[in-house]
Length: 169
Image (cartoon, rainbow, N blue to C red; front, side):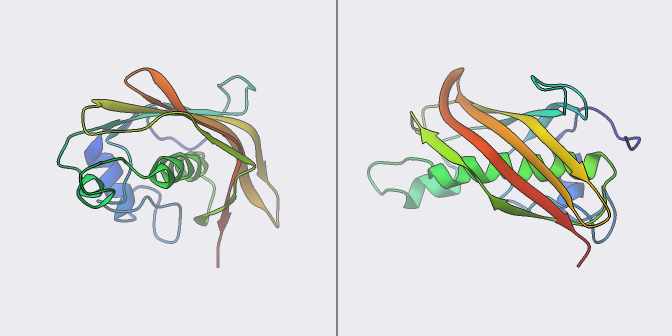
């Protein structure tokens, strides 16, 4: 593993969005408003249910978040795709945290179940990513993980087989 901390505050996540955390040409988070977390509270390369690595992060929900105004006027709901994107962001972040080289990109997801909604009265989302595979060969760098999103402790999204790769091109 690279010599990075096991938790990150908002300033560190913003440094990652600027390309400063893992270096130029390597894993990078999106900048706000697409950055879908405020802090990473846990990260590992050997933890989680399968012993292949995990990430736990949090996102503070406030009624003035940009997506509530437009999705949907009069019936504000966070788009489910943003929760999925947050899970993908964290999966790629973990690969960069391991010290693996290349820019991250999502390859797909096997299954997505949305069982709840994020409305403006919610206070916090918790993302939990649990790696089932972490592969680094000469030709392929990829993470495969399952994830959940909780809103104020209630499980609202469950995903299986998220895939994120790193590419040096």
